[in-house]
Length: 189
Image (cartoon, rainbow, N blue to C red; front, side):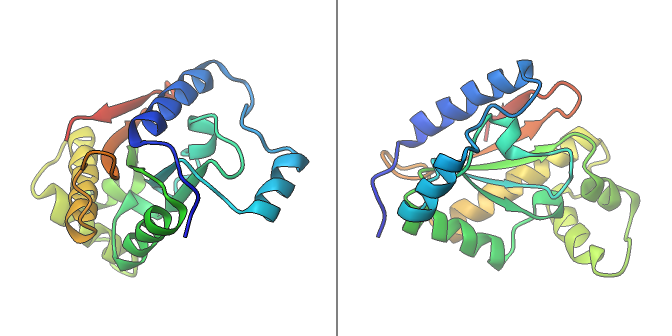
């Protein structure tokens, strides 16, 4: 099935330490060397965390957490909304790759949350904003709306995949990325 992976607490500490390095970095300090590419090609991947985040080009989890090839299992979709495809990806990474930490990472100035706050955009974007509306209700504050959207995704993962932060099990948490400062704020959920 999968090799033994690190605990959720160890994974969270690695993410927090990586974000501290990122705040001072000029380039991505994660390992992207030919050696690690070949190693992960030959031996497979053992990512220590699953990160569900927005497709926004300013939100780059591998950089934000100073991670290299094979360290993060990243799922990206506008507005970091959850549907069966994203849930299936989380399930795969947890069950088959042994990831013990799931982080739903919202962010400052999210266009999808902004579109939901502005109304109904129509087209296929509406599938995303409808999901965000279910999360935010009548909230009009962008930061609060983003946090409510993250909270809904966390709750869906916990409920649908039965991931309820059990001892030595998978931990699911929410976070908010401040684009301007580069800091990741972990949300109390």
